[in-house]
Length: 564
Image 1 (cartoon, rainbow, N blue to C red):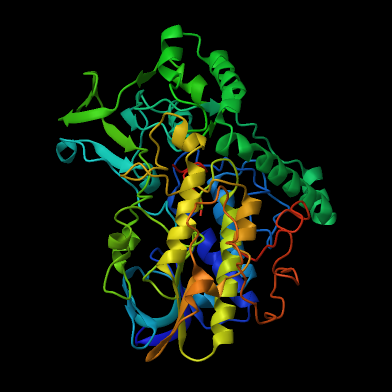
Image 2 (tube, helix red, strand yellow; image 1 turned 180 degrees about the vertical axis):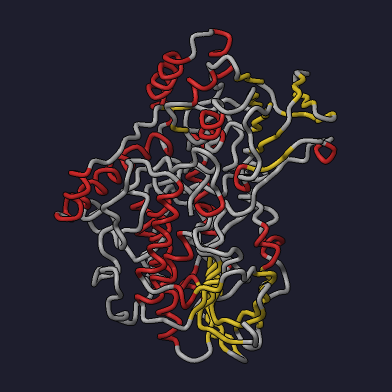
């Protein structure tokens, strides 16, 4: 990017969200766009997380784009190499490479209210864009706690998402900090290699068996030759998870049976009553992500693996001191302590219409209209935005729903004509957020008695969607112009205020406002691209399983999928 170029759309990030957005843009006939990627290859979190044992805990046939099914997944729960290869394949199959700018980290984005466009500064140059689609994902920037003495630790230190493959763990005394989805995969993978492994557990996770197996050659052949078998498999996986949602969102007390199964799973491998007591959570199952592993408990039962049921308090030289006073001398520290989810660093780099950063706008908690657009930031939207995360299903389903919304947003701009922008009305954003938070009050994530990464610094759940993926699909089917202010160069065209009246009472379920009308959609889209895009970009997400729910061609990975 040697000069100051202008594009219709700038997509930030090349994980599932960014690549999905790129495919959908082309499907809509938009080719004037770029995908800005800070790294030297595509893949997002599945490029960054290359730790031993890294895999997805969502079934492969559900953890993939509906528009780009893969009949040749090697396992029912695929590992990181297979998922990254899939994303590379998507980039090639759909002709995305010419649009992708690697080694182009976004340093700052500023809204130009006079020209109605975004000014974008990257590490490779500057450009402007009419619309920005931020697909950086919540699992982009690792979080390492500020532990006293860490800077003076003489050994090796790294985060699970920045694994040092040049460092040989064999024969080393290693400390694993954290017990999230990454840690329960790393522990069994490295335990046989290291001299001694010490796991620092602040909070015990609920762990269920992971019924992973190789997908047979016969199954793969059927999925290639008879596509309906692949669609049926995806639909079944989707439907089962939709049926589970009510227990998490409305009736957490029904999860007691699942707790009993999880305790039985632990008892099969952990025979020591004292160790079982340390590993038994004190909160309702589902409050934190339910983790899947059939190797975690057997690894903790090894004689060369120690569990410290306390968080890390400080470091004195090469000695790690836990909050309960336990001292452990180690050669290396691995942090499996998650990511900046509710305080994403990209928010500091987005400056809106009033000169305020997105981080400042969200200082009291993230909120976005339908999980996509933020008040004060015209023509900007995010993929995997506030309250779009899931506790039991595939994030790809939510990503594709948001891409439906993105596509209709761009159609609306096209129909309005000229130099135009859409700014979400604060009243509409607040209305949506109040509904979501009202529904959140009865969920297991808020009532289960735990502290999780789902909650922000104020204790509000700004990450998870309190409903089914089908509900979210319906809520993001199209853009309602009544929820937006139409901005033009030199003037502001306003939708009548009565059209955006906010209900005085908070409804019990997210849904259309009384009298709410949808804006129309324009544009028939482009001709099908290589890779067999369906002729209707809103085809059924589950191969027919979700009657009446629209789908787009679309696309991160959440902390739930093996990379917490």
